[in-house]
Structures are given as C-alpha cells and as structure tokens.
Image (cartoon, rainbow, N blue to C red; front, side, top):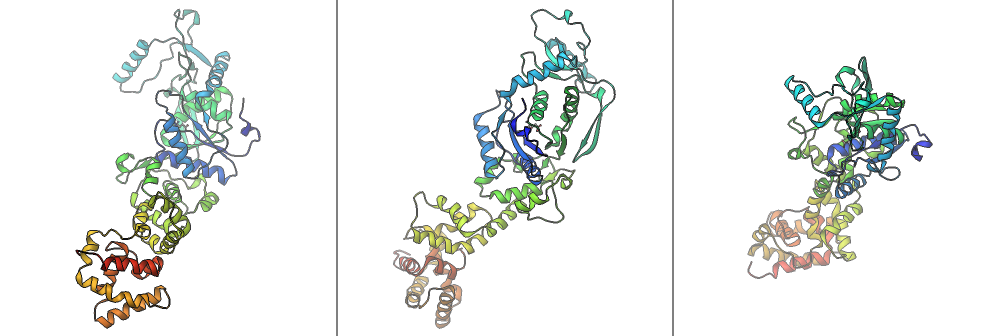
Length: 476
Ligand code: GLU
C-alpha cells in the first residue's frame, strides 16, 4: 500500500527519519530543517518517519524528545509520525518479491562462517564482504532446521552511480559491495531494506541527510533498481564539526535541542544558526524563516564540514532577542520569574522595562536574571555589591533626593534624569554618587539597565518605596 499523501503526488516529498535512541541533536535538527525548508520552498510535503526497528535501543522518551524538539523549532510534519517497526510486513513483502523474481536468495551461512570471512578480511586489511557462497547454491543443499537470511543478488560487474545534489556524481565499483542482507534469519528487515521500502511507499522524492549515509546510498540504489522502483534524489550534507575541526561531540556543544532551549536560546535563533551551518546565501547571516523558505535550495549547501561555533549562536540569539516583541519576551520570562500569576501592575513594569533589558541580554536565561528585580517584592534583597554601595553617605543622599523625586510633575525618563542631575549639581557630587545608590536601592544590585529607565518602568510609587526601604534599613 502506498500512503495516501503520495496519491496526490505533490512534486516534492522529503522526510526526516531519526532513530529514537536519544535526544534530537543539532546534527539531526539541521537535517530536519533542511528537509523541511526544501519541502516548503517547493510547496511540497515534509514527513516524519521514526526508525524504531532496533527495539532494544529505541525508547518512548527519545521519541518524545525528538518530537518536542522538532515542534519547538517549528518544523511541523505532515500526517502522523510513521513507525518503521509497524511496517515490518511491507518490508518482508518486498524481500519476498525479490526472492520470487530470483533477485534475492536465501543464505544459510552460519555465524561461524561469517566470523571466518570477517577474520580473513581483517587479516587482508580490507572491510568484510560476504563472498556470495549461497548465491548460486542449490537450496536442496540447505541445512535442515535453519532459517536463512535473505540477501540481494547484487550486480557483480559494472558500477553504481549516484548523482548527489550536494556531492555531485559519485560512483562505486559494484565489486566493492557484497550481497547485502535484506531480511535476517529471524525475519526482521535490515535498515537498508526498511529505508528503501518506506521511502518508496511514502513517496519520498528527495532524501536529504548527513553524508555519513553516502555509502548506504549505493546499496539503496541497487535495491531500488532490483525492485524496479524509481530512485529518489539524494543530497548528502557534510557533517557538523566542532570549532577545533574534530567531529562534533558533547564537548563542542553537540547537545540535544532541549539543552539549547534550557540555555535560553530562541527557536528562531537556533533555526537561523543551523541553516547557516552548511548552507549559505551570499553574505547573509541573519535570515528569517520566511526568507529561508524563499531562498532555500540545495545549490547553497556547502561540500565541506561546517564548524559549530557557540559564540556565533549566542550573538545571533542576542539579535533575535532584540528583534523580539516586548510582549512576547515578557510571556517567556514571566513564568520563570514567578510560579503564581503576577499583578497587572507588576507585569506592566516588566513590559516597560523590556526594551532596555532585551538590549543587554544574549540569552533568555540572562534576560530572566536581569529582569528579576522588576517583579521582586519589597523589601528587595541586596547583593553584596549593593550593600557596599549603600553606605551611610549614600543613604543620606537617598533621603535627600526622595523629596524632589516625589514632587516631580511628570514621571518620565527626561523629568527623572533632569531632577537627578540638578540634585548632583546642587550637592556638588558626581552623577554616579547618586545614580549608584539609586540603582542599588531600586534593583538590589550594582549593575542594571540605566537607572532613569528603571525608575520610569518601576513607576513613581514603587521607586520611592524602594528608596525608602533602603534608607530605613538598619545596620547598613
Ligand atoms: N535513521 C537514520 C539515522 O538516524 C537515518 C536514515 C536516513 O535518513 O536514511 O541516522
């Protein structure tokens, strides 16, 4: 049975085919993104297939992590997630068809015989190739009570070509490839068979994946030919390396997408960053998803491995934070700042403070930390720096400035700044000698956005109350 979504035959169908054995790593997320963009660009469909045939290594938790990661990144797929395991009978059927047509054969090799072939190959310094001993053998010679594996009768002469949309034309001599197993002796399909049958039946037209699968593409091509099916287009994208050029590992930031979410990255920033890892459009660095959909094609994919650079990702995230609407950022930050709903007045305060807060943060985690003082209840806890700033002289100045501030006609950045500057002039002190105590009293810290903006956002009542709290404090 071909899937319904293939019936209407839209021009392009791509898929992401993760094995649910762990988190959705950046490499997988980039593969998914490229497939999603390619489908979107061509008005096609992006499908999700879960390669869960390895029952021991597959888990529900990993499946959930992958789906959550894709959803968070906004990479939505058409229809449900297709379980490869549930399609075992379709895989077996394809192998039986090849068997019936004489394009596959039963192989009764014992594990010992295969181990011997492996040993010989090792001694000769080459990779293991099955020697084809059951290829032409009379099945009546088969040992009793042994279930055979089913192998493809692969071409022995000639070459297999792939016109890869990223790697270009790649060729392998058929004698380099052995007769691969399609069905194991226990009747379970191999990855090679399952992928081909599923891609065909799901109507996949373009297989975009990491170039670690390039050698598999040769065998898969042989299988397509044997089955008489049209081979999809292949595009094998170079893997992601760490900043030091070595294959990406945890040490380099090869973490699950969920870890980046925890670290305070926005999905649009990660999406933009992953797109630029191995794909380019001139010198453009900031590429919105709409632009990416418009521009994405495989011509822009590079042939050499890209390097994962945490600093670049962080800077890009800063850009997306600055570009985000203040309301959206408040909605992301508020649940982290308080478990219980906050009053409208407090929410309003945070919203007013957001324009300056977002200019100073590179991640949501940083933004949340910096924003905390807006929603904290009085009296504010003071950090060590703030305590140090609020010495006896500083408290005297706070007492002295309370009155002019309370009497201001308008509570605006300009009016507040004007009053504070006039105060500093009159007292013959530097602006910092009053601005720093104000900052410490208003935010509980020695570093914050500009103190005039902070006061405007906090509002007159809250600002004055925080100043009073400070000078009424004992034991300073
Ligand atoms: N399940 C394979 C993997 O996780 C992908 C196979 C494919 O894309 O053809 O790497």
